[in-house]
Length: 115
Image (tube, rainbow, N blue to C red; front, side, top):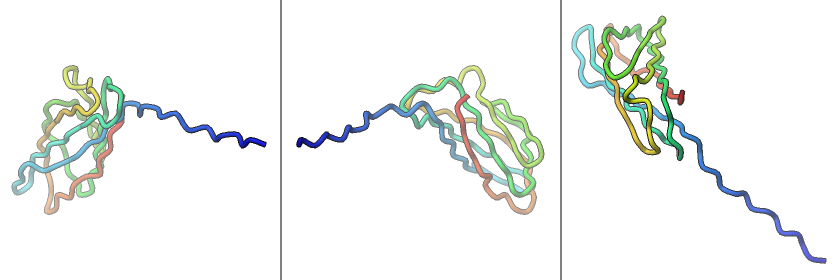
């Protein structure tokens, strides 16, 4: 008898997904400036993104640019604005903010989802 060949999986494109990275641009006593880069890591375009930042040391965001940011307790949520939400595969954008910090300014846990 002839063996039936095992079918191979057909590769599928990964839908648009985003990744976010955080870095401190500068800091001073009681405050800091930070920037978040949002990149489309998928194989399809995305229409928008939402970044969540979970701060550990009581940081508060006081001013933002290139995103609409709300904060409740230690969690800040940043949403794209009209001109920087659509990202082609591999494309990226940045947003920034000023914040207050105490004696320590630990980097937040950062996550990103498409919207």
